[in-house]
Amino acid sequence: MNYCQKIYLKRSDYMIEDIQSLDNELVKLRDFFSKENGKREKLQEQLKQYNDELERMIKDIQLLEKVIVLFQKTSEFAREQARVQIESLVTKCLQFIFGADIRFSIEINELRNKANAEFYIISEIDGITIKTKPELSRGGGVVDIVSLALRIAFLQIHKPYIQGPLILDEPAKHVSEDYIYNVGDFLKQTSTMFNRQIIMVTHNQHLSALGDINYRVSLKGSKSNIDKVEL
Image (cartoon, rainbow, N blue to C red; front, side, top):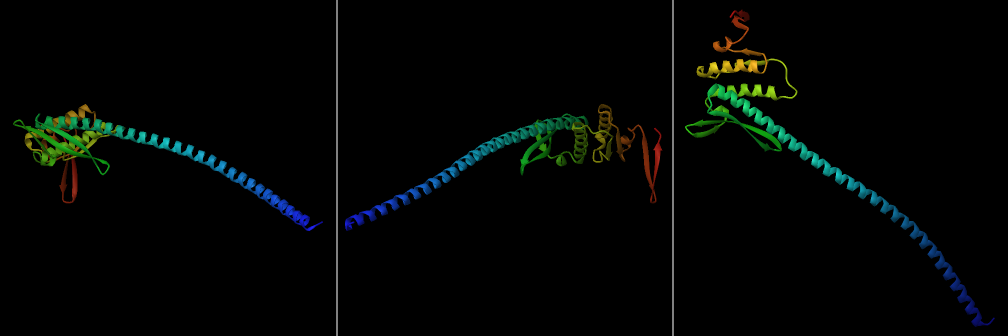
């Protein structure tokens, strides 16, 4: 074998080794590609699952938002219904006692994301409409009557219905004698209309005389004496 033949054989050996090396690298690359492709398919499957879950969550959020709006609307409707009923009852009470030129108004506003109610007395005097707070209208007597009427209104519109008597402590202590008879008539009619017993503590002689059963409480020294008053 001459020198040229030896060189050729060596070159052939190198080429065979290079091809084998390339084949090995190709196998490794195929394995790597196969593994990475498997990872990619798995990631795509996970991505699809996450997208489906995200879509479901978005639908749930949209549904909850609709439910919240429904509750808000329902709450607003319930408040409006209650407002109308309370205004009507308190106005009738005020008009029964003080006359037809007075009415009760409730204004509901949102304050710090909560419903806030303000009470007003609206009077018509010589064609002029006057709107004031109850405590600033016609003295303390109006506050007494508004307070009394509100208690009755809340009892009547409360759900479930509240059983039992209406207990009053000096319900008309600031009402003048000009209107105290009207207060008495109103209490009598309220008891009959709503079929509710009224238990009242009062120093007013006219109001005390309206009761079906009366007791007088007197203090002697440190002892309270209770005597039934015969009508």
